[in-house]
Image (cartoon, rainbow, N blue to C red; front, side, top):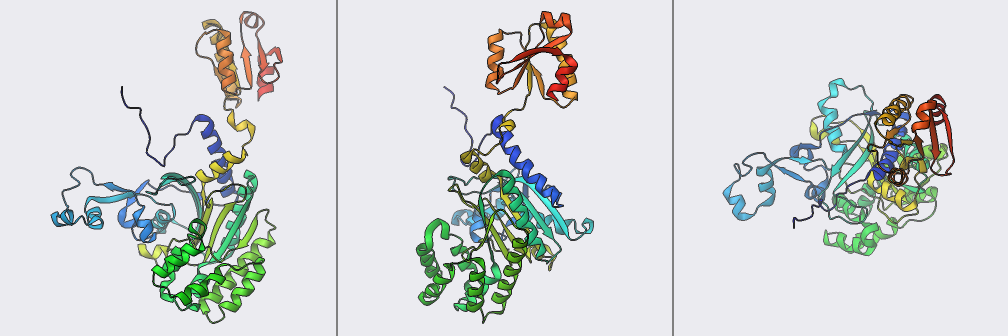
Length: 453
């Protein structure tokens, strides 16, 4: 017996019903992007590895899917690299391209490559899949969609405030209760200075980014393994555990970071962002979280992460300010800020909470029963008129038994069945049955179109 086909771990197939639900999410996010004035672009699924490598930190580089060169990919491989199993060098010799890890770095490449055609500030959105060679687990996939919105060419904190408002709109429309957590990388840099470990800022952010996954004790051990002193680790612990409302936390940080110029700048920026979003009276909770780090190295200012309140799952949206990202592509000094909605995790949240509108699971509004060629031809003309009026309609393709055709309509959640039989042909009419109530009536074709449209 032939082996049953399968798909790679960390990827998924989606049925028509599932796609209707996913499109509901995409359409909700896309409409919010449009209302906030963002313009859509797309970039290739694969990028040159020179574009991707070194942008996500050491751990991120390991999660890049590399693509073997076409043809004889071993042609340029050094025999010594092969003998030594020098994987980084072998990768560079066999692979020139990789699947994109996120949409932000390709966007930075796009901005630099097309700078002459862009009017700054440039507001873009992008809804496309990304790939990560991660270990699959609940809420974590190797192929998943991101829905990004970014603004480049402006340092104004009004952009951060607007993005928080956009997040609030999307999750309010989806009916998901969330907490929007915010911090500032300058605050984290100031904390590293204050505890005497300024040169360990990358190690600190990478470690504390894992607090939710491995807990504070394991984070502290990782920090010690990275060379932080016991005194520094103990000084860091109460800072990461600051409690109280947003104003209390910011006041406490002002005291802790009084000797750090960059730390105090981060506090002022975060206070302005918090005051700005509070002015818009958001429906979602917005919380200052000093332990929020967003491990990606390119963030330089405000950082954002969204957690669902009613489902145990990782971050469902994240982002932040990146002042230096385009500099690695030859355009220093161009500031940007953006967010990314994790569509696949949002999909899992809506599935668990059953928050989809009922109507999105139904694509076809009316199915016409097939009694034979003459009746099918008459039905096809009515179906053509219905489609022109914007009504999704179909003809059952075979003149099967009525029971089979009605079962098909039921299984497809089609709300109406239309019948054109011998008597309807004679009277130039249609019998319409409501599949939910069971009621049916014979009406004219024009009335059918008016009722369904």
